[in-house]
Length: 238
Image: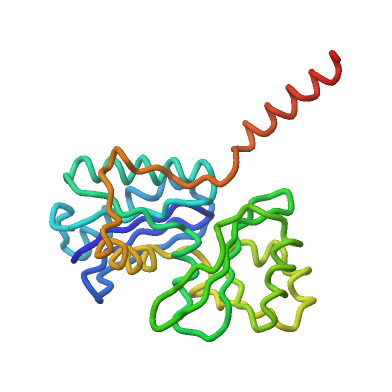
């Protein structure tokens, strides 16, 4: 099974091609350029350098969120465009699941945290069991304080990863049970999206391109600001 995978849900943009258990190519960039500038050139580059005809792939895998609203929309549009052009299905891969998949077969709890601003993170908790990664909680948009409280509740070592670690390092460093993934597996990687998509595709989780929907978990900043403004106007008029 050959999969072309993309992830644009956070600061990092990443594209990869995997064939079964073999990672053929991966291009990951964590820099200032926008995802709209980088993701399609990345896809073109890995296809060209690996001599892969995009029509040869079996599925398009896309990190489906949560994450940056702009990034989610760029990723969804890119995946849908590729899937339509290539007449392929999309395998949606929750971003937090793919992040947790960066850490393999540990006996510790895994907690990816993505910066959601306003002292909040997108997060969930995971554990490996008999070679399969299990999500122990729902995916959540919660405060870093609530995340720490939940992590402490497991009473064991917890591995944190994701771009939220550097944002909240000061608070996290106060807890001796907390550990941190190294740089090479701390941020989004399309290789993990592809690897997890292999499992999901075998489980029948692929969808038609027009059925693919990102996971937002909460309203966009613009929507929240609009609601706050309307609420303020109602209180003023009342």
